[in-house]
Image (cartoon, rainbow, N blue to C red; front, top):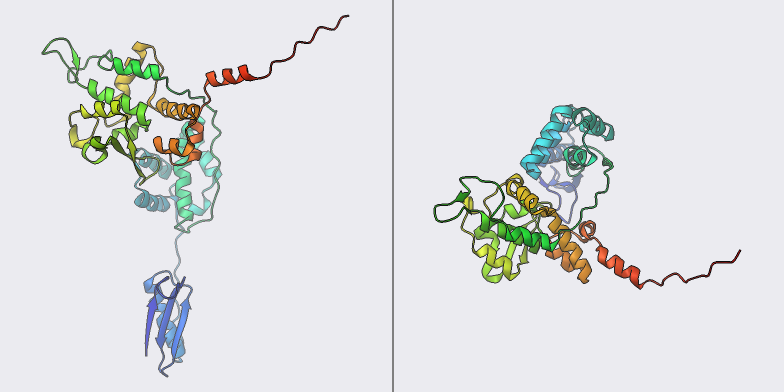
Length: 362
């Protein structure tokens, strides 16, 4: 007389726990334990099945009252799985403080709108979606799958105004590179004048970052997390990019010779990083005064629009463009591709002009 349990997928592709054994009469049996959630529950079910076959009624199942899962417990499970960034952890903490005790099944669109109205009043729709909608939806969707704590829900984002983000002008980037050693601000720990005129110690890093932004157009945060020994392969002229918006995705991307030369001149930074700045604000502290002094409009993300737009103008296949800029998909590439004004004027010039019709007399 014996009984064993088998986990899902271990015997002929079973989808539930199985109990296999032999009763006191020597008869073999196999039963599907549909109510088993883990090995302990399966073991109890298998022993109850064996007792029933031997003529003994099963022990009464204990009455277990499960407490409803809350938004707080769902967020804890989501954090343990996802390991969000510090910024996302702060956004989740604000949501938990406001609606943490709410049952996860009761969380819906109304709770999101109420949270935005009470805790983020007067903010733009883009801010509401970044600070509330996306983390809130991520936790609710994780509670649906794989936790199975609630039904699927489709949340509507706050309607944002479409902003026309122009691509960066190559001439503007060239101006920034040529003047990267003069940002217009003086910081003693960044500058030195022991030998000759005042020199920016970070000038080479600024030039290399601008060259890299123009060449590969990665997001600024992805550039700042590059490690010298792990992510640079300068002899082969390539760089390994960790894509922040696609967790776990790593791509090796080629680099043009000018970019390789700029990166080769850099000295090692603390903790093995390629660049000395750890945050976006650290870059904008010198980039803003520099572009203001030169009278150019440039942000690192405009380089991403420039790559997609220039490739579209040159007729490069979308699959190649997607790899060049490490976009997650061709669908995510589409918003970055802009049609140049020059191409639209050329298209207008090729159109058939309106015929000249004489004015009717009278």
